[in-house]
Image 1 (spheres, rainbow, N blue to C red):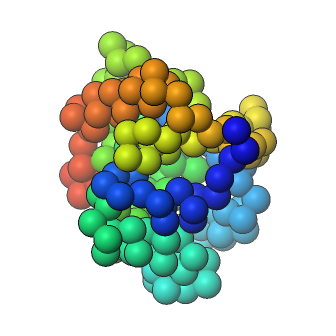
Image 2: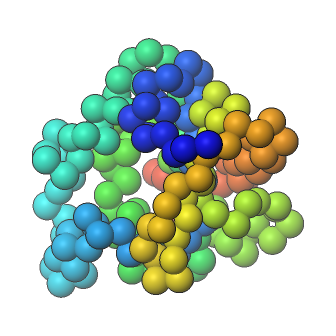
Length: 174
């Protein structure tokens, strides 16, 4: 099955879009320059959902949320957090502003949870889009499946993480 773009998956979603992130480091090319700037200055200048950096994502999520799709993101992170995760934490205000719900779970609190070993999105509990990353964090590809057993595994895994995770407003990094 050929990967489908996130825009297409969101456009077709009717009820839910959930995302589980499990990496402590991402080498995603379009985030490299803003991350380096943040590491140097400690501030992010791209926190407006309508700026060029965020606009495509903000439009996709806002459109889905306006149709009634509940968009949730959970992050399992090592503590203390990596620089990449601290950067994500600082930018999560944008995710919240566009309608995402975000929670964080320290990895040591997930010892008894089973989860796939790749980041993934699940749409309407039926379609899973895995992100496959290289060891350096670079995105290699996306794999898509509608296998009911895989969708159930990912949905159940996400719900277990979500139930235990801390809402963004209460999650502190040091």
